[in-house]
Image (cartoon, rainbow, N blue to C red):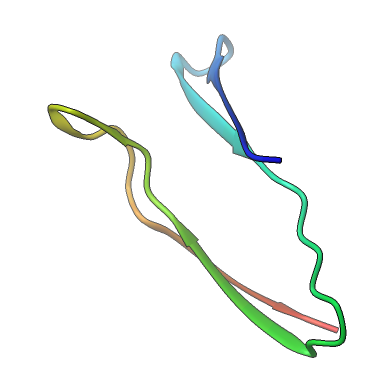
Length: 50
């Protein structure tokens, strides 16, 4: 499940999700929050490894 919610501490946004990698040893993740007017955040990149 993906959840996006306001972050009252920073005035920004918080994105959370559950990663279920199965048997993968490497998973590359990226996210960018946006609305109809354009980006709300920078692009977030993360490499998860076992």
